[in-house]
Length: 79
Image 1 (cartoon, rainbow, N blue to C red):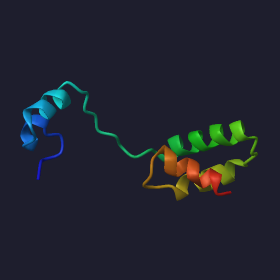
Image 2 (tube, one colour):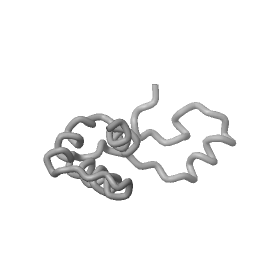
Image 3 (cartoon, rainbow, N blue to C red):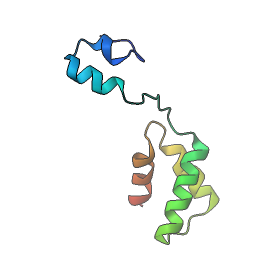
Image 4 (cartoon, one colour):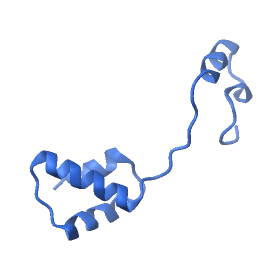
């Protein structure tokens, strides 16, 4: 198994593929913070015309702990 952050050349892939992958940008994405999830929910709720209290936004933001933007927006969609 390759170590996290290892470059494409260490993955034992065909040269054509590793040369293409090595030209790309590699970044680590961290989970969204509660504040970021709250801001995303507030913006999406406003765009949809859904009025939520600050307490409701806080609660929703705390429910989505492991997902990214898609999981966070899914909480609003399920209301």
